[in-house]
Length: 101
Image (cartoon, rainbow, N blue to C red; front, top):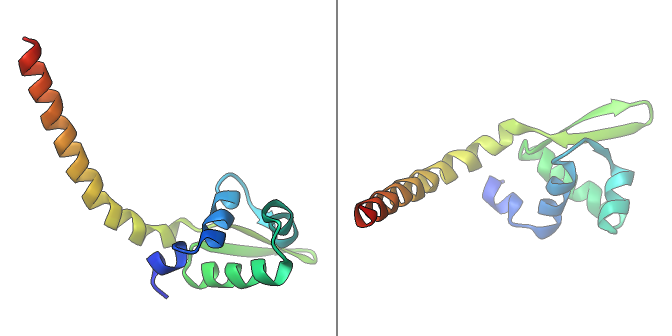
């Protein structure tokens, strides 16, 4: 599945936001999102297949965390726009500097 399609879903984006600072179990995500366990598990499977999250088994629990590798495609696409805005902001700064002299 296309990475952009994966992150277009609001529940999956909320899961990623919850995982941004630390890894979490399915139960923790269920509590934080107030969504039932089957729904969270379904979205985690999609995120895992897109390589946006990875997991490890800790006793009887599976712990999920962000997988930076999957975000590479998003970052490369966004980088072109980042450069565009950076160039435009540099041009604006130069224009304002010229006017201020």
